[in-house]
Length: 227
View (cartoon, rainbow, N blue to C red):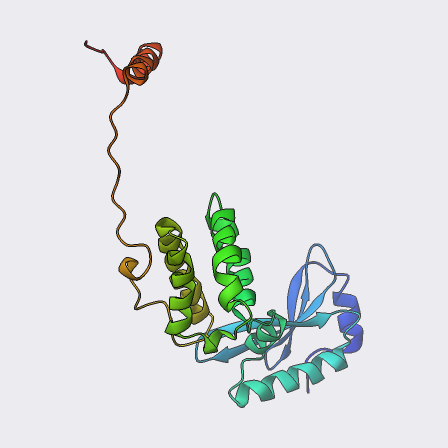
């Protein structure tokens, strides 16, 4: 039998913020703002966790006990109900296009100052070749096909960038347990655009004069100049 009664729950719902135990890990939680809610504490191999079962009065004491009993049964069966719920709420990621959009939304758009650069490379160079493929079905030959299409158009820089993004994209898939293999991992810049060498160019007299005029204008930044 639980420790709480229906009358107590109604009374507690109007009281000061506190957690009231009903036993076996079930708690009635009253907070400063928002509706009271039912919470269950449980333990897995990864430690103690907490999960919200529902809000009061939409979930009554009797309903909360039923939900808690079902929750505890899943835990005894080796299932973490909280993780299962999170998996259900995750969007389906099956194709390479879906993988990239998840990577863009959860990583690139937050981390990079110019996320449109990898977005443009993906939509123009990668997606037309492997975008509709299932992630686990992409092979090293598919990666080579993407790179060869770019090499044939004599764009070595784009080829190298594309290889870099494909490696990162499939590392994202591995991180999400969507595949065990990175089909781009074995490729190097030699398979893409090759090692790019910087180009040396001498400045013209006009460019030299302009450069020194800029230096003089911003003398405090560059320090004393000698001719």
